[in-house]
Length: 166
Image (cartoon, rainbow, N blue to C red; front, side):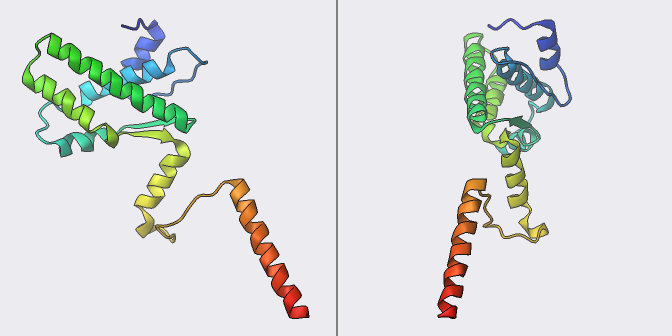
């Protein structure tokens, strides 16, 4: 079991939005994971009778990381933390309703957005293309790919002009 400092424990037990900024190896991910567990425990009703109800509550959570690698690590550690909690509940012979609740949470983790800020904006745009003058099949390209496409377009147009001059 991880021992947290007073500041970390205060972050874990906070009810609002949370920004964790600290150096490498300081426990940011562990604090965020415990904060998510705390938030779920306090805000997702244990009386939810369907996976759909739980999924709707979990969709309220947005976790932004700087890199895709960090978001994948966060997802994996959250899943592992829930596995630990479920095992602990089984060992403590918890009630079936408590155990079922956390098992439903684990099955619906996909409802929590854990990713990068640009990934979040892509999701928002794709989910709202009917409200925007943009195609649902839009793509975001890197600067390098964009420059390559511009070069090809420029060269193609230059070749066309050269052919017309002949």
